[in-house]
Structures are given as C-alpha cells and as structure tokens.
Length: 172
Image 1: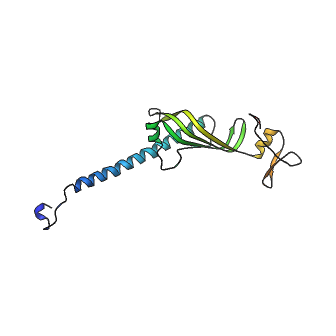
Image 2: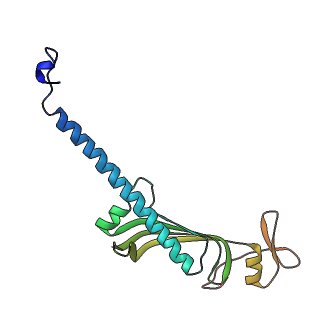
C-alpha cells in the first residue's frame, strides 16, 4: 500500500515502526538475559552436584540464589557475590556418621567467576548454617548403644531411656 492508496485522512505516524522495533529489541534482550541467568544457574548447580558425586556424595542437589527472581549469575559476574547457596544431601556419610538428610545453607558468598572453567570459585562465606537428620541406627552406632524411636522420641539402651544429646566441641 502506498501513500496514494491510503484512505483519506489516514496517515502513518512518524516513528511508529521505530517504536515497534525498539519494543521488540527490548523484549528479545530481556528474554536473552533471563535465558542466560537460568542456563547459568543450572550449569553451575549441575557442575557442583557432579563435583560432590566425584567426592563420593552421590545424592546431592545444589541450588544457587535465594529468591527465584533475583539475578545470581549477573550479580556474580559484576559484583563478585552470591546471596545464597543451598546444598541438600540424602543418605550419605558426613564426618563419619551416616546421615539420612542434610542441608547446608551458605550465605553472602564472595566469588570469583571463571567463565572458561564454567565455575564460581568461592573465596569467602560470611554466614552459614546446617541441619542434619540422623537415623536412630546412626545415633545408636555413634553412642555404642541401641537407639530407636518410641512415641516420636529417641530412646536409647535396653531400658528405652529418653536420649538427651548435645554437641560438646567435636563430640556428641
């Protein structure tokens, strides 16, 4: 359709094609950034889980970042920080004790991204916590007595004494 073919009074607005192209480019750029973020997270999480498997920790999952909507990869690249890394383990040995489940949450990490190696090297962890879930058998083996669960409580020994456990230094 040429300007001569247009209905009288209808004129093409100047810049409307440019605005449409700009909007399309913005949408493509945002989708590209989101794609790089999600692919980068999955790649690093998978690599970390594989590294744990090489160390004998077979059933591990690694999750980068806190909230799903906060960027992790771009923050790591630009700022050298990662807000949070969560590592979940199942049915593995931790410090010589058989653990049913374990969760490590590491917060405010300083990292050095290595794009060639596709990795994030951690140089500092500001905060962290962990939670271990032990089976009664593992607790009993560690204490040298029979242990089991009765009425949602851990009991030990032949008289089913309620267990009172604490950590003292490196001892349970």
